[in-house]
Amino acid sequence: MEEKDKEYIWHPFTQMREWVADTPLIIESGKGSYLIDTEGRRYIDGFSSVWVNIHGHRKKAIDKAITEQLKRIAHSTLLGLSNIPSILLAEKLIRVAHNSGLFSLSKVFYSDNGSTAVEAGLKMAFQYWQLKGGGYRDKTKFLALENAYHGDTIGSVSLGGIDLFHKLYKPLLFETIKVPSPNCYRCPIDKNHPDCNLACIREAEKVLKRHHHETAAFVIEPLIQAAAGMIVSPPGYLSQISSLCKQYNVLLIADEVATGFGRTGRMFACEHEDVTPDIMAIAKGITGGYLPLAATLVTEDIYNAFLGEYKEFKTFFHGHSYTGNPLGCAAAIANIDIFEKENVLHHVRVKSSLLEKLLRQLKDHPHVGDIRQKGLMAGIELVKDKSSKAPYPLEDKAGYRVCLEARNMGLILRPIGNVIILIPPLSISSAILKKMVAIIAAAIETVTGNGFQQ
Ligand SMILES: *Cc1c(COP(=O)(O)O)cnc(C)c1O
Image 1 (cartoon, protein in one colour):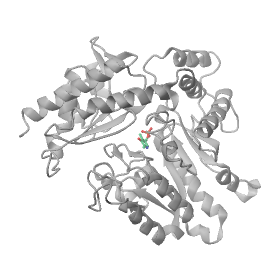
Image 2 (image 1 turned 90 degrees about the vertical axis):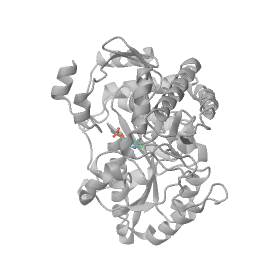
Image 3 (image 1 turned 90 degrees about the horizontal axis):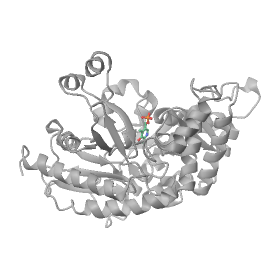
Image 4 (image 1 turned 45 degrees about the horizontal axis):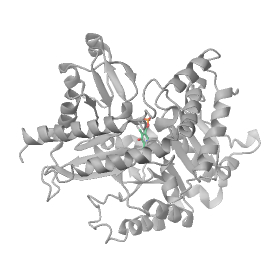
């Protein structure tokens, strides 16, 4: 297997020269919170197989839903036809959104990954204002946060603000207007929370004041800028951004791709601050981490703007081959049913407080600069010097080395630069969670103790 991997696969976000020089870990199966490799070794899936897994691997009810659907049909499209699982799921998604207080979301547009869910939202917002006509036609631009991550397609990269991933592509991208990141550990406007009184909101307001007439939408990862290194926004930030968007007649697009489906302790992150976006992108956890599926939920107002005679060409000309894939939708229905049957959100809140308590023990470590957490999403930022917050140079690969140590101790993690990311399956048990944090503590100690100067 190893030779064939190296011969044929180009891995994502991976320096392949290093990959081929190394021994790859090849996963053969999974069970609950564990992944099992081709050598029969077991690892805790500490990153939920890239943030997607919810109820653990081989969850019976989801396995069954997929195999049952498979007996009927694997794929049939929504282009010119409909299919049963996509209809039932759409109803369920709207009901779940309403149960979360997102009452104005009423229509579901399907795609198959987070980037496309965001991208469809961008095109909808753009077209919405074009269809409104008149002076609204000037509303063609997008606001996004510094350090934003919304996916890897050109549209979603245009919103992105992570230089390492995005800067090179600049000539290909459309221009977006950046708003300072609500990053309290490394505040871009040099304030201290909470004394700052959310000064970053005033900065966002300045941008809106200047650009609202030419702005279609503000795109935001609600509560937590995940791929930026789990940057948790201060309480009240999201709701104030939402109010400003209303005040300045700018649509709010919530990218709940990472935060959706219980990650933060609520079904959707927007719920924490009673915010209803105009457009919401969901993906990763939607199928419980089983199959590629995504959805863009919109309000009746946006949907209605696209209605007309065919010859008016108000149609939303967008759709992917696997739109509304029945297997994916069947998995997603089973996923949502489990949330209801097993009181998953309660479990997440209990496990989140345990995680918070466990992580507190790492706070005083000389190379742990900051610990950020919301629900079962957490980041531990390693620093070279705690008092000056000086980071380890990226080429030292401190985060990567900690994760490699952790792997040798039976835990799979994937860092973001110097930030160790913890995103376990929501179903993780207390015992495994404790083991996970103990391994991380040991790995940080090993890496910062030898090789890195104290
Ligand atoms: C992962 C992610 C995306 C992109 O989703 P893909 O399925 O990888 O295309 C978009 N937005 C956020 C917030 C994400 O975390």
